[in-house]
Amino acid sequence: MKLILLVLLGLSLLTVALANRAPVAVRLLPEDLAALTGLTWAMELPLFLVIFAGIIAGVLIGFVWEWFREHGHRATASQKSREVARLERELAVLKDSTSVPPKDEVLALLEKR
Image (cartoon, rainbow, N blue to C red; front, side, top):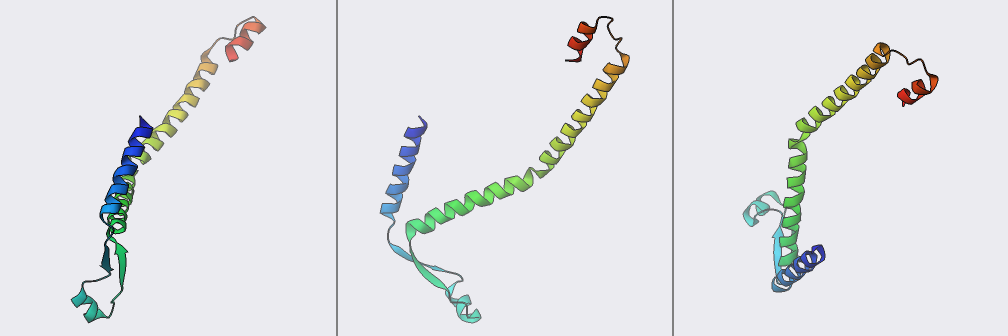
């Protein structure tokens, strides 16, 4: 199923690329603003590269945005896991201090496991 989905995605991307092969001018700034500032950088690229670059940039921006947004959740989860580990250690110490050691040495070894 995953392979079929990947093949369909690849075919659709190939179809979009073949349908949009015409070159377009990609400029750093609009022409009037570029003339004013002197930054007239421009490049001719096939349209499908511009489309795919826009998709990739959007996905990357979304990933970074979510990573920053979830920072608080990750910090809380880390704090809670440290607290759970501390409480588990404390519970183990309390169990050891309150338990009455068995009289049989074999049973004492089995309980330590």
